Length: 217
Image (tube, rainbow, N blue to C red; front, side, top):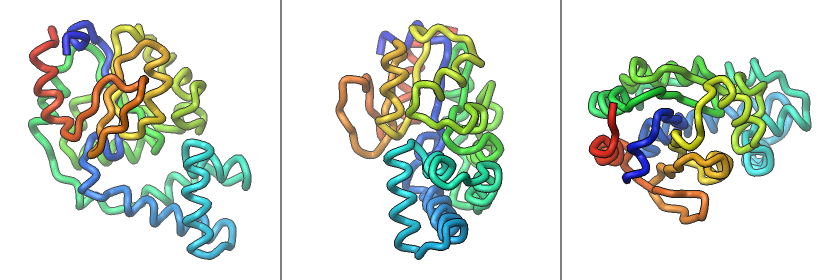
């Protein structure tokens, strides 16, 4: 935990990171994705589910695959798949306090859209805890885990990777930050041990509570 004492930039993924997977918000988005693929490509529900998953595996996001192979309009896609209910999310005042007390810049970077991220943060009571929100549109729709996507977003913040950390639920998306020299934290119910992952937690609030003891403002 001593490595956290030098950090001045804190980068957080959004979905299943700043809210627990048990809240199952992303289930709604996956259903919307499949519906979009069915309508846009005139395929069955089964085929749409298979394409959604394959493009996520091969390209980082379903959207990236749809843009590459089918020329889908990204703005329309992001608007439609993020048109969901946020009632499953509950505020976490303690998490908001802990993030707000972290020294330096606090940033959200998601493969979703920035407007969607803002809605999630509001539902979680975290909207005042962050200094900036970046969505996939801010990387010209190139998603994590692509190195160029990170480069586009991180260039906007101009931070020293040796003084930064990335919190993320998808282990793939921690490889580039690790390679840049950032601390990496995998936030997920189950650990996925890998050389590019420094820490794992299934409880972000509890983890930041421990980090608090090693930070200086």
